[in-house]
Image (tube, rainbow, N blue to C red; front, side, top):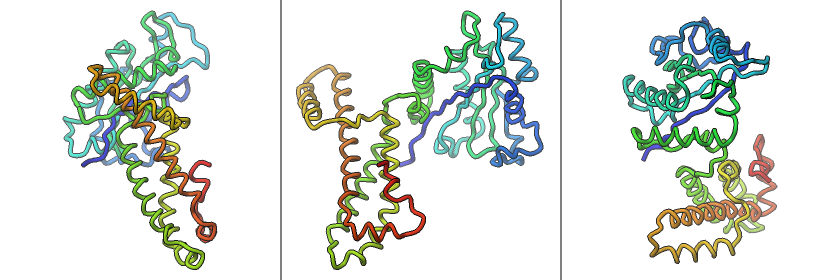
Amino acid sequence: MGQSQFAILRFAKYKGPEISNIEAHNERTKENYASNPNIDKSRSHLNFHLIEPKGKYRRLAEQQIKEAGCRTRSDSVRLVEALVTATPEFFKCKKKAEIRAYFQEALDFIQQHQDPKTIIFAAVHMDEANPHMHLSFVPLTEDKRLSAKEIVENRKELVQWQDRFWEHMVKKYPDLERGESASKTGRDHIPPRVFKEMTRLTKQKAKLEELLAGVNAFNAKGKAAEIGDLLDKYIPAVGQMHTTLKKYNVAFTATAAENKKLKKKNEQLAESLDKATRESTLKKLADAKLHRDYEDALALLDRIPKEVLAEYMKKPEKGRVNAYGR
């Protein structure tokens, strides 16, 4: 089974002088790119435009703003850049024509939600680690106001962009999941990979419990090395899970009473025709279990004998107990 595949859409805002820098990067007009050593210039000929810029980015943006009759300040956002890509797994074994079709589909999506006339360029880079598209537009609203805030800055808009993007792309590419960026905008959808990560962490926990069960005052030092090797992986994994659960807004306050209520509700809904309500309840139960499993994984660290922990802490250059977010 392959790794998860994500459709990714992110936005950046540019106010003025930096626009010429992104133009130099996107159009590959420099000899060297100190800021991005990942560019393989021997592959730059594979890059292509879906929309060619008709001049300098900054001049084109200022022209549109002037024609719309908008006033600007030095701190006004003149250009919004969308970065469109997918996880490397998605692009594996895909030919250039298939990659082009993916980015064309993404461009079609953006043109449905932002006036195509405001889009200055769309360039696909094939000369870096992962194919991706940079697309810039002047953030003009339908009623001709310059407002990046209204289009991409508030949380509600960003969530809608992410959801609509995924819904659009998944019709042609059913293997795609919602992009990571969706989580950064507050979405509580937890992708399947998080549950898989928790399964791996629970297996590590079982191994650690097994080792700890055989520890006593006489053999603690001898067992410390073996336990320490496992802790090197276990502690960062617990830390990562803590960060992930926070990112996906998993409630850290779920109580046993609340879980009992959910289970009862699920049993009552078993015969119900209201599929959506039942699915929502099942999701809450799955999230609650995720939270419980994390708490159990964290609690195990408190059960490590002091002698073992003391030996482990002597190992050089480790993140140690702080790595798990306490």
